[in-house]
Image (cartoon, rainbow, N blue to C red; front, side):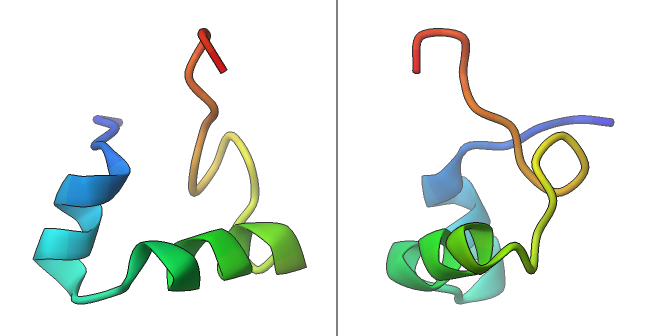
Amino acid sequence: MTWIRLQRFCELTGYTADAVYAKMKKGAWAEGLHWCKAPDG
């Protein structure tokens, strides 16, 4: 799987960064499956 940065994801999908963070916080997207945290935090 290839990971892309948030800004590029937003450009491709039309989601806003706030919408993405909301999905991550609510657990709609699983860490390691739908998103991952960069090693530097």
